[in-house]
Image (tube, rainbow, N blue to C red; front, side):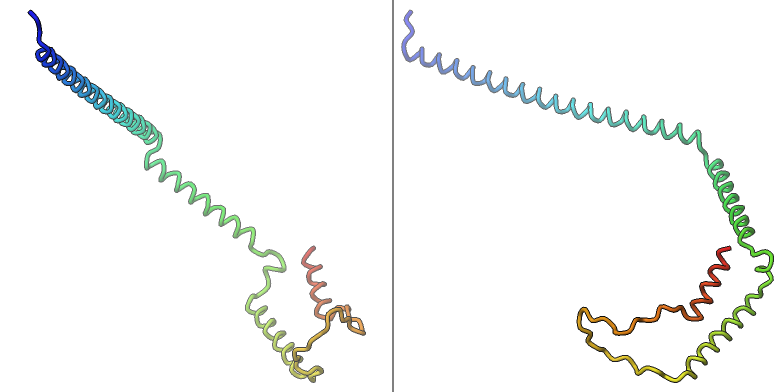
Length: 168
């Protein structure tokens, strides 16, 4: 039995189609395996996420067992009480004693107003010795011909005496 060329060609085409079908099937198998791998990776990530959330929830429960709202309220009350005690101590320490406690604030205010009024009156009664200042251009490097007085005024002397007295 001799196979004709035509039949041999048909046989070759049949095998070719079988191979093509097999290649297509193998490609589909690979695609399904790849899809299955992706689904398994997603399931693993989901499981790990859920486990982490459970661990976090358990840790929070454990922390809440150690601390309840009554303990927090009690602690805050203690802090507020200690703060109030500290304020009272600071007020007691800042209260003037001795001669400083005998000063009447209203009397001191009145005396200060009187001194300010007298100083203002004295300034108003003194004749004006200088004209109002007008802008004057001074060349760079110019030095005054007479030195400026560095002698302290009576007010500056009084201020220095008060500062020295307060430093005791």
